[in-house]
Image 1: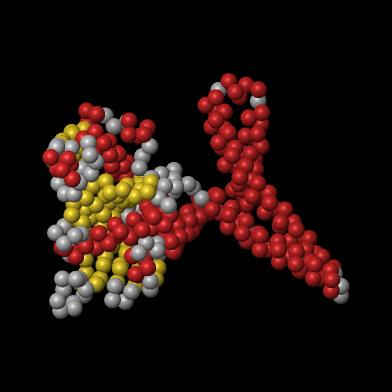
Image 2: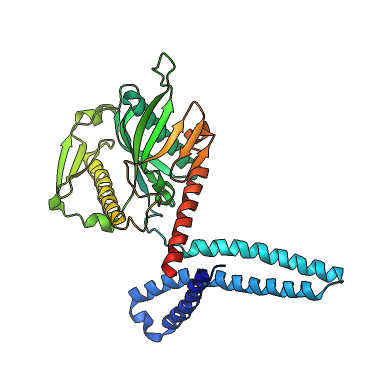
Length: 365
C-alpha cells in the first residue's frame, strides 16, 4: 500500500480515539445536536479504522508466514502450511486495500438522491426524436432492473411517436450516483425506419441528469422570485386532463430557469412536481458553476454536466457502443438499448474513483 494511503488511514485511527473520548464525556448529552453529529462521524470513522486494523493484522500474518517459509526449509509440511497462510493473507490484503481506497474517496452527498433525467431531441429531426424515445426506454428498463421507480414528469411527443423532450423522475437507492455520468450529448448512427435507400444517418440527443434536492433546499426558493402560469394540458390523459387548466409552468425569474408539469390530474400536484424539477435545475446550475471554477483540478473528470459534449456513440450497423470519455467500446449495443447498462455504469464509476484517488494522492503529496 502506498505511503500516502497509510498516512491518511493513520489519521482515522487518531480521530477515532478523539471521538470516543468526546462521546464518553458526561456533558455530551446536554447538546443533542453535537451528540448526533459526533455519533454519525464515529460510525463512519470506525468503519474505516476497523478495516485498517484488519489490514495491519493480516500484514503481520503475511510477514510471519514469510519468516516461517525461510526457516522451514526441508520441512514439507511446514512449508505447505506457511505457503497456504501466505496466499490467504495476500489475497485478503488485496481485497482490503481496494475497500480502504474506496472508503477514503470523497463522497458526493447527492449520490444517494433520487434523480430527474431530461432527454431532448437534437440534430436529426424525426430520427432524433425517435432516438430520444429509445433512450427513455433504455433508462426505464435499466431502472426496472435495479428495482427503482420511474415516472414520466413531462413529455412533448413528436409526430412519429418519439419525443422532442421527455423528463423522467426516478426514485430508489443511489439513483443519482449511478446515472449522473449520463449527462451529455448522445450520438446515434443507424438507418432510420423512414429511409428508403438504406443510408446511415447520424442524429443526436442531449441528456441531463439532475439530483432531486431535499425539501430543505426547496424551501430556500423565494416565492416572490417565481412566476406561475397555468394552461390546458395536451396529449394523452383522458377528458379531465384536457378540459381544465391543470398544467403548470413555473419560471424562476432571477435565472430564467423554467419547469413545467402536465401529467398529473390536478393543478396542485402538477405545481408540486414542477417545483421539484425547477429546484433540481437550479441546484444543477449551482453545481455546474462550482465545477467550472474547479475545472483545472477536475479536468477530464466524468460528469461535469456539460451537455454540449458528445460523450457517447451508438452505432447500430456495427452493434457498437462507445463511451468517448473513458475509451470504452462494447459490441452488445442491442442489449444495452434493452437496459443492460451495468457494465457501463460500473466502468464510469471505476474511472471516477481512479481520478479521485489520483487527486487525493496529489493533495497529500
